[in-house]
Length: 108
Image (cartoon, rainbow, N blue to C red):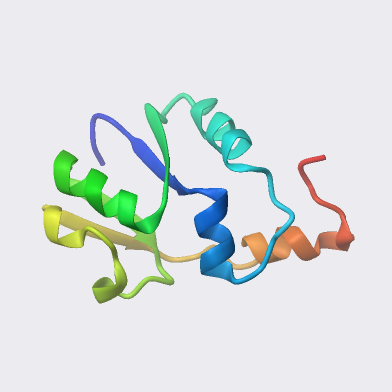
């Protein structure tokens, strides 16, 4: 959809606030490294919701992509974008499914 792909991920702190619990997931550094290992990902930013809004207001990229669980009014930074795309979930593919899978994390 574009020339450069910047992926913003939630910091560990912001995830614990958003999800209201501690999930047994890889930490922010490991998640960022995993994303950067994908050849189509150019940059990864670890941020909070407020930091994401600040980043988007400065970058003013053409396209913002979000998961389908977000309603348009809930998407932080949408007012700075030319286009916002929401993508539906793939059935059976979710963080919750990873966590609950046989009680063992898949990444170990």
